Length: 428
Image (tube, rainbow, N blue to C red):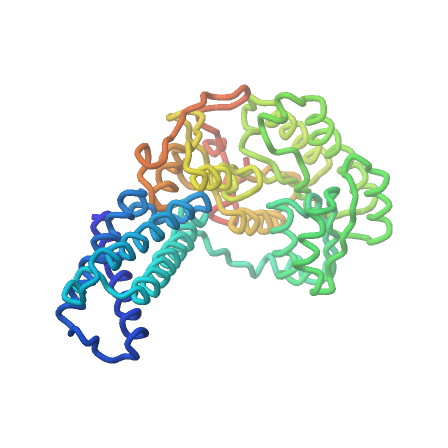
């Protein structure tokens, strides 16, 4: 059905291009050889154009990629060249039904080529839009009642660590939207800090601080100077394979830095400290999960809050951007194991719930209800289909095997969890 639809659309483009070429060549008047012969000549042109698109494998390529442009240009150029050759071989005007004039061929070729590329470019934009993170979850993104969040954050000075990351930058946006008087954006990556600054500095309430959480004395100096009341700690190493092969650095950055941050927060009178944790801290099998669990214990011991959730779609560590690149490059899409499942949320949804948890009783570990686990291979197949391709036929899927520290299924630990005032947040 898709193939038939594609041929119909391409045929319509060819017809419009040919009609426009005739109209431009003859000043919107009827050609002297009449409309019947003109219609016959269009059928000849359309046949040649379709044949060239089939020959160069263009008909089924609706997701436009840079490497496909040469293929299309060859198809367009070959079709025009063949029609020009027909014009030379069949010189008699009695044969006009199989060879339009040179100018008509040239104008038609340009319009047809441009139209075919533009319609595919529009389809590519549409396919990309269909792959937006919220739609991949096959459920409605939860709309949060933010009255409690606004009431809590309004007028406060808030420090956000990891402010240039996917989660940290969204925390900055939502805290500013909630009416915070000042947001201190702590980030050690210059470019990441610059990008979030470009977005939010116009508010006049955001302060960029190029600091490293592994230097607590500098963080303490900033706290003493700015007097934040709330600290939202999102800075961490989050790539499981990188933590596995750099265990000492992962422990230093995730566990020890958080412990030191809790200490300086207490010394500087910060009333509320919220630590962004992960579902991998539940019965951890990886270095990253173990460092997060250790960090949670430091946070709870300090009388502060930890919030656990799973994978965030579209974040810097998510599979979604990687698969989008792999699909754009023609595949293969790599999946670790056919049986693997993960919990997913959009970054907006996760951060919204984190801010709600920040208003709850401190000294607790809260876990977000992320719905049902999602099969990674099903997600990969859906992304391929939404991009306009057929899984395993147009785009291959390769299974690479479980990496050290990974689980087939993650746990949320909600079996013994206690409900809270919010239906999607549990105390664990």
